[in-house]
Length: 258
Image (cartoon, rainbow, N blue to C red; front, side):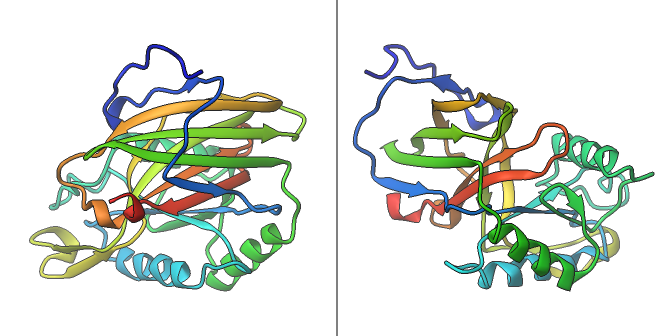
């Protein structure tokens, strides 16, 4: 029986809640038996060096399939906003995450574009593909099962089941990302350029502690009016809270719900 009382939250204030059961769902996806790493890009519309990295992430996404699996996510940071073009997709939360990753990697500074594979700074494109393949060949100690249904036109209901056999508490996050965004830039270093965004993070949740063993979590999220519903995807990520390494991740397009 699902908890009798479920608070309704906007995505900007997502809530994680334990559940004890669930109803039939419209969309079901489970993680693979090996690790699906998260590939994070830290980028900005105000950075002239970033469009090639944006294209790299988009190209990476075209190679994902049963034998090559990863979760690409593009985080737009806010520290370029004062330099001529305020990026409407940027958030201080994403800059803070990049700073945390820099701390884990013992970096002296943060920069864009930066690519991170399973918590590790990675500057070489070929190395990114190699690291993904190595993770894909490594058995996962965490599994994720995701069930999503659409309750109302702009409200999603998701139940996430974790099975954590890693031996320690993991950290879980939910991401909502959007593909196919095209933007005309009218200021800053990219003035006059047309930028294409894929896997752009619209929302990154606060951490949820995933205990050892099996546990389930229920979330409700409202899709905001300016998001293109047919281009949205949902990702669930578990990481090592000390190193940022991906323990397991799964993603799915949401367009089948609409």
